[in-house]
Structure formats: structure tokens, C-alpha cells
Image (tube, rainbow, N blue to C red):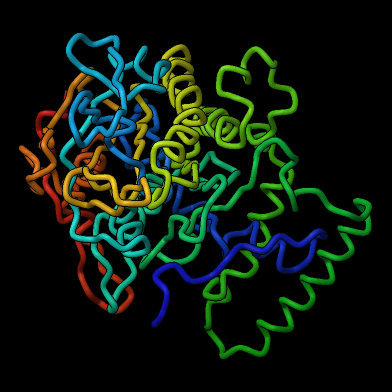
Length: 431
């Protein structure tokens, strides 16, 4: 069976041809579009409009709604999980999310998300694209859609980034591999592959030699064939542009004061969230930050509590930081995973996969604040929650918030028209 998310990211330790190709977009940069085209597209946008961005806090493995955003304290399905009050009267979160609780007035919770996918790979695909897997087409993730529909000609670094990705990072789908997310490890270290390992003069000689090869390649092509069809020269040029860009500083946390870093927590995920804020501040369209380890078939309470300890300071600090820098209204922050966990605890003390009513948190971008939508059954007997929200509707809503038309049809390379979303906007979420 062909995997839904083929391919892995390899990081060479020298500036090789593969490195240049990776930096240039064949493994994940959405800024390969010719500059003239980007400028034309940018000119079509409303003058003076601030760019929109998305930050996805991806909780890989399926977080338990009962131990995060939808506690039912004192019930059998809680199995001892407590709840805490938040900054919004009447709304509770699970114990351990004290910092997130303090910024609940900036967040909207959907507690009734439903999906038809209970397998990890298929559910990840569904949540990241808004479509169920289809053997005839690969759909783009929300980040790929955003970078395709709202290009930023002033950006010299990747417009779509995945920090700490797992085996299923966000993809460009039918838009092409150049819209795949650029993959990045713990931001604590230096960004790899952006410094030449030879002197400037020698690098210039190498590029001149490469130009000779390119010309020879072109001379062997049929007359009239556009050399840009291979994207190779464009790839190299964009890679070199990135390597010399001041915008690379957004990736570097070395000079960020400790007072700015410590609230996020001394964890890779915390640093990833801080880097995400810096990146959207620089104009990056979409940043996905992954926190792995939520798959709790055994010892659910311990597993979820350990992950919550990492999530709580990072999520809350990101919201505060974006608000303080006047970025929250121009950034949609989404926090959730591929599905939830079963209301009942299994004999191993775990909770199993549950796509029948789980939680997603959304903030910023014009979303109504301090709101809760939907309700799950506190007895655990009913599968269907009250006021269910389909995964597709979340995508349509986010696209609407970003100024996109979810019904817009894209003609795929095989000539098949597909809408950006097959969902409907969630009206109560729209501020």
C-alpha cells in the first residue's frame, strides 16, 4: 500500500547539490514561483492589508479531550481527572493547563469535532487537508493552500514551515512539492545548510561552473523548450537568496533574551512555538509546530499529564506574545491532533482512538473569544456529541478567516477541479 505521506527529510552536513535543491524548494519551499508572478499576485491584494498567517500546534498521536480541553470532573469517564476554572466564568479546562486557563478569554474551543477516520495516518491526512484520503489525488494542507493563494513577494525564507515534524508533515499535494512544508528540528541549534563551507571566491567559481552545465543542458533541449520547466536554475537562485537573507534571523534564538524564552518552557516544543511567533512576525504564512507522544493506549493519565506540562506554558506564552506584539488578530492559532481518546479507560489504564467527539482550540484571526461550541456526553454512552462540527468545516472557517473563498475551485494537474474546502464556515466562530 502506498503511504499517504511518502518521503523523509535528510540533512547533509555539507553544501551539496542536494542541499541546494532542498533549500530551493524541491523538498519543501513555497517561494519557487517566479518573482514577477509573485509581484503580480501581490498587486492584486487589497493595498495596506496586513498579511495573514497560521500557526498550527500539532499534538501528534491524538490528545485526550478529557485531559485537555473538555474535562468532565466527577464523572466516570473522567476517571479521576480534575478540572480548573479559567479566565472565562463557566468554562473549565483539565488540571495542568493553568497557564492556558489564564488566557482562555482569547481562545475558542470546539468540543464536538467529529471525523470518520480513526487510523493515525488517515486521520492526520484528514485533519491537515480537510479531505479524507483519496487514491486518485493528494490534497494540499492548509499551509500549502495559504502559501499558494496568498504569496508574499517580500519573503526570502520559506513561507510554509514545519518545526519538529513527525513522519507526516504538511504537504503541498496537487500544488506540487514546492509547497511542502520546510522541515526544521529544534530551533535551539543553528539552522543547517545555509552557510557555504568554502570561501566566497571558490563558491563563485562553483556557481559559474554550474552555469556552464546549465547552458549545456539547455542547448541539448528541443528548441523553444522553457528551461524554467525544470525549475532547477530557479531553485538554485532562491536557495542562494535565502542563504544571504537577513530574514534568517527569525530562525535563530541564540540572541533572544532568556526573559523572552523562559516563559515558553525549556523544551524543543517551547522553542518551536517561540520560533513560530518570530517567523510569522517576519511574514511567514504558516508554521506547524509538532508535540509528539499523545498516543496513550497504556497509562493514559501519566502520558497525557507529561505532554500537558510541555504544552501549557508554550501555548499560553504564544497567545500572550502574539497579543502583546499586536499579531494575534492577524494570526490564526490552531491547537489539536488527529482525533481524541475514548471516554472509557481500557484495562491497561489507557484510552483508545476516538474520532466521535474531540476538541480543537482556535485563537486569533478574528475568531470569537472565550467561546465554547459543542458538548460531549458526560456519561460516555452517546457517540454523537451535541452540535457536531466536521473537520471539513474547520478548514472552511480558517480559510474564510484568512480571506480565502473555500468554494474556489483549483484545476489540478490532471484536469480535475477541486474546491479549496468541501466544508461550511462555522458561523458562531466568526467574530
